[in-house]
Length: 92
Image 1: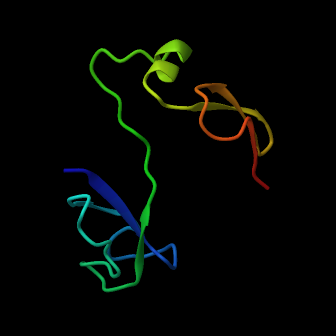
Image 2: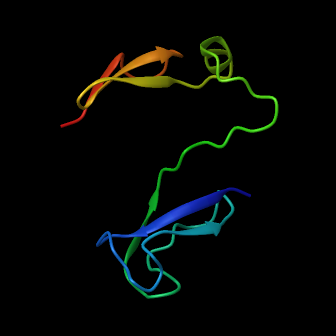
């Protein structure tokens, strides 16, 4: 079962340190409130954990069906491996 990260919608909570993890089935409904403090919460997108004999070379990333971006400037990210997503992402 996947581990999902949740965070309060307000962005801060002294009781649960702002982020908590929940083991849920994919078919389970998203949580709406934090089980510790009762604040409204939302599920966050978290980084994929690769372990073992995984290589992070561009060819391995592409053959795994993933996409890699590298920072090219202030708020600008360019795709370096894979074919999914835009060529360039600009965040301001």
